Image (cartoon, rainbow, N blue to C red; front, side):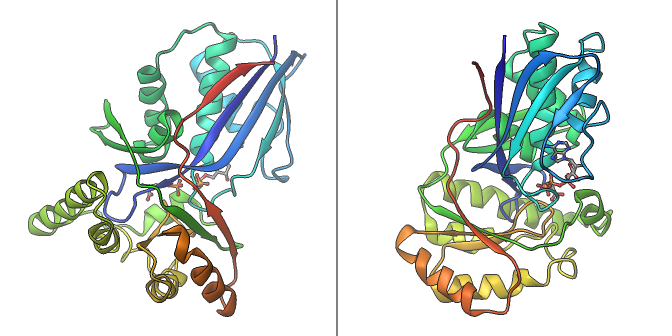
Length: 291
Ligand SMILES: Nc1ncnc2c1ncn2[C@@H]1O[C@H](COP(=O)(O)OP(=O)(O)O)[C@@H](O)[C@H]1O
Ligand SMILES: N[C@@H](CCOP(=O)(O)O)C(=O)O
């Protein structure tokens, strides 16, 4: 039996929802689980840095969960840019969990997949929407994750992806180790109010609050100097709001369809070096099908 595993990319944080809020977006990792082989073979075009054998993150994850599964041939296609803040590592971890689930007959529930994926990734804001789809808000106490799926408004997502990688581990190293009580209360209140604005479709407030993160964007500013300029271009184009996608360097601008061309023109006229993707929210999460 052959299986196709399809996992969406994700954009985490949405400004103040650091390590908590994320959305699934319309780029995909697709893995075909093919015939049994003598050793693991991962056929991909993701570059020489991504292993083609059991050192691949997908296989490591699968073997960690189901050590006795037999090697197979995998064919991988992915349009998720690596190490750019669009959840490529989460997509690989989830594909690995699905491989273990299929070959090891684990019968994992969605919640079990979510718990395992969060522990491996370390935070739930990418893995939860990648598994469940759409907008997901989560909390994680380092033991158990609680996730709620909700509806993200019908907006376009313009992802500006710079040509250089920024590994999530490197981008987390610049974060402060402490936040004082007053700052923490304010920072979480911005995130809470953002969620209320999203759920009530109050786009004016969504835009204001998504740009008022107090947790991570300032600390990461030197790593992502293009954030400020893209935010200004977003304002000029009449976009809803702009935030640092995940740990960066991708910058996400959420925008109504009617204003999209204004934004594209402004970015094209700027000196910014990167590729602009026009994405949509992916309403369903990971799928596994036979073929
Ligand atoms: N399809 C894949 N197969 C194997 N490893 C992958 C895959 N996608 C991503 N990775 C691993 O995840 C790393 C990027 O993870 P990370 O720094 O968290 O960035 P991102 O924001 O893309 O998740 C890559 O350098 C690679 O090691
Ligand atoms: N909350 C995390 C999200 C990392 O997302 P990624 O797509 O960059 O892996 C963080 O901001 O570090």
